[in-house]
Amino acid sequence: MNPMSATPAPKNKFARTHPGWSVWLRRPSVTALSFAVLFAYAFFLLPTKDTAPPFLFYLSINLFIVLVLAFTGNILADPKKPEALKMIAALLLIAVFCWLFYRYSGAQWGRLKDFFFNWETLEGNWWILWQGLEVTLLLAFISGIGSVLVGLLIAVLRTLHSPTLNFFLKVYVDVFRSIPMIVVMVFIFFALPFMGISLGSIVTTILALSLGYGAYASECFRAGIESVHSGQLEAARSLGLSRWKTISKIILPQAFPVVIPPLTGTLVAMLKDTAVASIVAAPELLKRARELYTSETNPTPLVAAALIYLVVLIPLVRAVNVLENKLQKRRKV
Amino acid sequence: MFLRTSSRKGVKCKMNDTGAMIEVVDLHKRFKDLHVLKGISTSVKQSEVVAVMGPSGSGKSTFLRCMNRLEEPSSGHIYIEGIDILAPYIDINRVRTEIGMVFQSFNLFPHLTSIENIKLAPMSVRKISDQEATERGMALLDKVGLVDKAKVYPEQLSGGQQQRVAIARALAMQPQIMFFDEPTSALDPEMIGEVLDVMRNMAKEGMTMMVVSHEMGFIKEAADRILFLVDGLIVEDGTPDQIFNYSKNERTLEFLSKII
Ligand SMILES: Nc1ncnc2c1ncn2[C@@H]1O[C@H](COP(=O)(O)OP(=O)(O)OP(=O)(O)O)[C@@H](O)[C@H]1O
Ligand SMILES: [Mg+2]
Image (cartoon, rainbow over the protein chains, first blue to last red):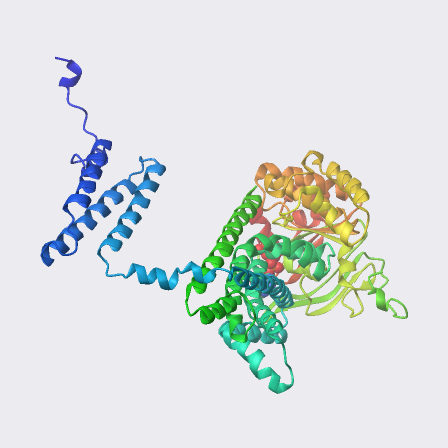
């Protein structure tokens, strides 16, 4: 009747050749319905461990997993769905898998809790871990400064382009990047006394971390310095700036944004590696946790230590990222 | 005046008093096997504007860069105001404060604003106060017509503006001599004029200049002499009129026919 509807739409070479499953699947009503179906499936149809013959049991669970994956995948892949919904879907997916694991695994939850999450063993012992954390942070702070200084020194010396000097610097950097930190510490702590040099565990740790991570830091600095265009150096030198002024006023300020991301990554790795100092009995966090582990004959203090490392490191890693973005932005403006 | 401060007393300067601002004697430069400059001798008088021309790879940039020792010459002598700047007791940083250099790619310091670019060297090398450096810097920016861009970072400037700031930066050290290495060849055509205008004014004010450039109009008007460099040798040395109108040298003619 309507003349418009009578005329066929003009052929569009970009049109879908078939209706499109994904379009249909992504309609909100379908999404909601399939969620309801999955929910019902999970609660009423999923067998408990012993109620079904093995074949049906595995088929049923695997089918459920496939359906859940397809459902969340479909939501996540839809560019038109709001991010909040995607976040909920992703969290739901994780929750479902945890629930499945909890329901079907042969885990001994009670014993696990008694062993690893026995918070009573920590009662009255928190201050010991706290002291350990203080030592860890102190070690990281001083060694951090040390390794930045070592790294900067090496990188600056390398800009002199003296083949002989470079040879020795390269040997240093390569050696320290190849030796595990634990070996360096053990060597300084247990072998040097035979050469008449006895260093305490704290000094040993700071020395080992500064030397070792100084090697890594020097590579970060070197990459940053090399990223500065050679024309900058020429312009600075042609103005009569000395080598040192050129480095401090022209090269390093420009290298800095490039250096920050890898350098902070290196320093965070160093903070983690302070744990190695427990091998030379530096009273840092892991060492204190291990002491508690022995005295309480329960590994919960180790778990607590791990959580403390997490709590300390995650904000640091985040902060580094924010700083990185800021520097990057300032460079772009 | 270029001596290391520590050894200034009691050292006899090797002088070469021909009265020339720059005197180059038998300058050679080798990069490993590559013999780039093969014995260049010339001299530049005070307030003279010398254009350096020649085909690509002939060693023009290397020649300029040897004269402030951005490249270390392999042999020969370079006298600036009569002083042998290749002598061991020379503090090359002091020499460089007397020679301003402008590059093809501007090489402004991207982390500093225009005025900071200009102030940096006077303040950290000549040790003049921030206030004085700012005043002088603003005067120089005025001279190149960019006062309003003082607080702007280089990447917000056009190529022509960047190059003018670069010139002001070099002038801030109050050099006796200015080197320009193809100052306009990285610029869009409409920006070349503004840079050449600044250079023309400097020439008028009596600056001693060496300019690697192929801007015929500018050279004809502003240059007192042209050095024509081919394969590391000066094949011709004369006024623009002599070279553009009366040259008999094959290589020169061939080159000129290409760029006109
Ligand atoms: N640092 C270097 N190491 C090795 N070879 C170099 C170096 N600098 C320049 N050369 C070589 O020296 C020769 C002359 O270079 P130069 O830059 O002086 O030429 P030019 O006349 O300025 O050329 P253009 O007009 O292209 O700028 C070229 O063959 C170049 O490859
Ligand atoms: Mg060149």
